Length: 390
Ligand code: SF4
Image 1 (tube, rainbow, N blue to C red):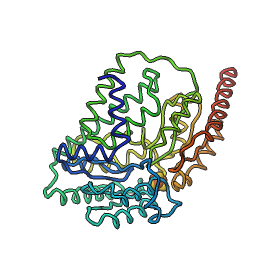
Image 2 (tube, rainbow, N blue to C red):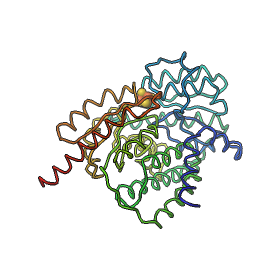
Image 3 (tube, protein in one colour):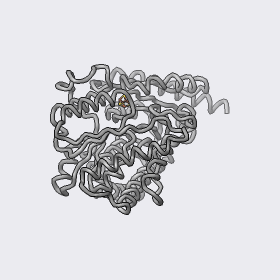
Image 4 (tube, helix red, strand yellow):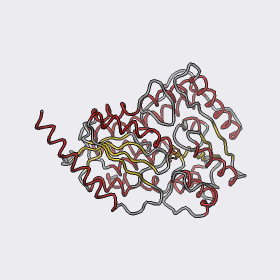
């Protein structure tokens, strides 16, 4: 299988996640469990014999969903509501939500009302991450989720099956992180679009099938020598529940940026942390939930030990990035609240960054092009000045 054919397989799943899940269900006869991002432990649904699929914003204009949710909600929640209203989720056996912001709560109510015949469960994860009771409360929530899944399948989830699912999901994260390492080191040319479809397809495909394709991709990449690239090394940050539009990613690279790293949910945030493969699986998942916020801090969580702006400054240094582009989904409150701290920290340190606000309805990127070109020019001059001063 050629590299192009492998990427095409990933892209089909990433771009048509519901179609891909439907086809999997028809072929394999498995139940499909849809979930909200960003903290859902797909391992449990997998151990229950289901295909876990993280619901995605789609590219369709929001029409019937308009009347059901505020127009000042983020594109992700509006799109999910629109898909529910249009019947796109009717084939799902369950939808399992985890809360992480007010807009998700609003969207969950509409989805529940629109799908009276679908099992819609809501699990409230503790958002305070560093209290003495945080671990116990996270475990309790995952226990509730496990019981909800068991009620659906009609029997207990086998502990060994859960360990096997954890190993499979860890393997998937490790393979994806390897691709990130190769790209960061300049040993593989993986565009921002390609990286996004690799991670996004992992959110919706069967993990064993995904691992198989990733293994083939790595084998092909290792056979080829990466061609060295000229351009400004760019770090992408932000964009939580929805994937950045491919047009924005392509435009950044067309303007001379080389995306070398990110903390996007459809990126490092999703794959940052492995689950302990030994001991009680629920303990391990609760620990994973708390640890991943230290690996890549999330502004929807409160953690005394995590600091997103310092994390980003360090991450930029590690990836030798010249500048950072913050992608902010319009009306994403957690991001809007936190961004001023990032701005202040970056300005204080003299690290260049550019904020781009994106929205579901954004279809033309030309207005952004000039801003990105100007930003990259500034980054180029600052890097040159730093080199001369050193
Ligand atoms: S965290 Fe942001 S992008 Fe995610 S649902 Fe909430 S507002 Fe939307």
